[in-house]
Image (cartoon, rainbow, N blue to C red; front, side, top):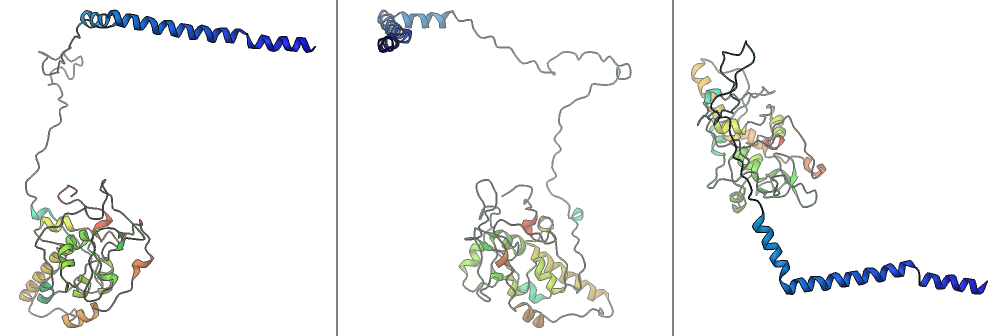
Length: 312
């Protein structure tokens, strides 16, 4: 029994698998020797040249457009036989250079109190020496806003905790004085960089001209909605400029046309400024990064409007 086991073990060592491995090794060596011999004789390079020289030339089939055809095939339908063929070409409609101001309609609902501004409010409107580029600061390469609950700052207007430039009010020094660059420019016509360079800059809330939905409700006014693009077409610099200037003009016309003053109560500017300068509660502390809160589509970032149809 022991001798038989030793024979079977010897048979495994000298089995058919070992013979196949030896054959494959010898075959690979012969192929390598043949390739080296052909390379020395230059036969491989010669065969490549012959293949490229004898290759048939590629035929270029010209594209035949429908316009190049002399005649269209006749129509089979008797009803359409005498009618001209339908053209499926897209016709580009030229855009009008300027949209008429008569076609722009801005409808702001009526609030609990009449909206009232004076010339003192007009003096408090901001301005900017340089234009602010929208949709850049606080955005990634794909044009998406960067929400960050840890490093981001809450904007008083859009109420989003994002990265990018934000203002700081020298008067209240609260979260209500933080405005992101896009909101500050679209809603108030000011440049956030210029505001940060000014040590005495005061936020729109302290000036009494804030037009966010929350501040307008506290005054008894209705939210404006996303009206920035319409305001630009009418020739105004920002939403705040539109609200103040159009209301002042309307009140002056009403006074000149009416014999008696309106029965609606008018709040003096001094009292209005005092009420608006009181600190507001910080509702932004509970706002988590990445959340998008909608407030009657009042603030500009609720619908991400493009200026003149192009995202800047």
